Length: 292
Image (cartoon, rainbow, N blue to C red; front, side):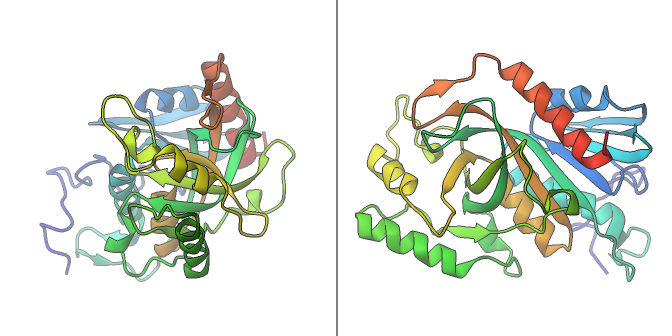
């Protein structure tokens, strides 16, 4: 039996942070960081059956082209992804009355539609990229010992950084997703993709310096930029993908992260049409999921 302190429910029986009840969420879930982006997605639905807001977590459930979908905002960072993925899984795979794991586990599909910064100089602004793997430098994954990670790829990166004379400030974890079937084949509308670096913050953890120095100096960033493993390199940097891939995979779900590249960190440039790029990404993501 799962104790009340571990599975916290509101008086109406909803999960504590998301304020959602079972059956209010579809098995196909779009996640976005920005709560305001939830409405930008759901306004494209044919109908919306549910709107719930709780803190930075906004959920809309509806239907598009005959398919039931939910869109949920995670807010920023893997600490929030930790809450969202666990509570969404609980809605399907825990019996709230008996406080135990259900015997008939349900598999969910998560599609993250986020924004990100390109890490390589040749990755164009305003394009979309699929994360083939994620490098966790945020500190969440060691707390989940059953998460499967790519130890060989981690060793390659560590050896590369040590050889360059710039060891990483935290131990890396590399995770790969179980992609939805719709993304199993190459797509000309998506960049080939590579490793997404998931950072613990926006400024120093991504190598940005305003008034405080960062451990990710230009030399460390340059060494990371030069890492190669077969056809994989670090293509972009953001704050959520590794958490989504790790937890979704450990819980038996499929997941994919598609990012609109609004900045190029190697060149120091930023999109002049960020809103239009995000709009195109939303249309693209919905067409993938519904065939529309």
